[in-house]
Length: 344
Ligand code: OKP
Ligand code: ZN
Image (cartoon, rainbow, N blue to C red; front, side, top):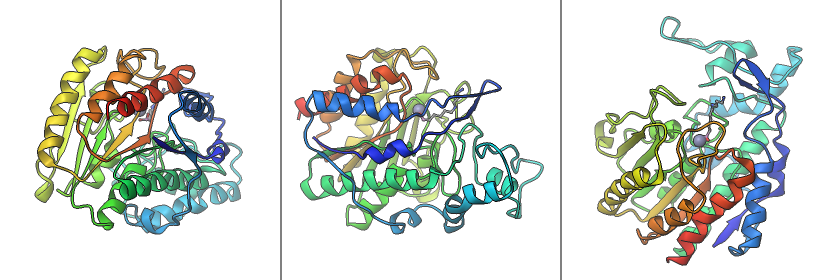
């Protein structure tokens, strides 16, 4: 399987993440990619190639212009205002202050464009987010050209990023940008299956009123887990999109046996939809030792996960999302790809 990877993903190394009332060293760190690429080389999985530059056009097909403009200058604006630390949002438009105006001050704009407060914005955020989508798009083009599969070793992740909001370590929604490009290149139906522990709220929201992109997500119940306010079973799409979003919220402690029951339901729905392309939002934070998640998958389970995804028999783009048990992330992610490849 072709892998798209760049050492430049290392440029994003933030110092702070607001967690538990402290500024901790971020869970979403460059070493995650080091472990994955090391395991991919050792497997070996296949050729490893650099991404190409796709510019802003495919990003603006998904995200609002003013949001992208905000991302492109946020760090300079924050610095110009003389703030000493990394840019962390601390106030939001909420139910009683709906935010009809976009503030001038960077503190106000940060909250306006943020959906959560754990993701520090720094000098490298925008460039890293652009690189991450280039990795996804390069891998996508290979899948479209060859009708086979590819792995986009993206970092930072993307599935929490909404049309005009960053958060949950995400800035640009890589799977959404890739799905839209596939549509623009003539693929009629695209399915996005999100197996990350966290609900893919950004992806759901982006395609909520559309039936040309089927979105499915297996995740920790939002009553108990980030992103809390989206990802419930009754969210099935709206208007023309009704029936084209499916959520499988699962309880903490979910093991692989329970998890696969729901995966098979998702697969049945995908089979019925007959997409021309399958995109997997591949998070391995369902792992039993993940520091911020509560499922109980074991390393060998990821081999079987890959095998089950391969059973769909579709051109498949894997896009890296979460996974924070850093020393095991390589084994777990590469196991999915190995299991997939061996059962093709
Ligand atoms: C991103 B992805 C840690 C709380 C972390 C944010 C989680 C973002 C996950 N104290 N909250 O879906 O893996
Ligand atoms: Zn996650």
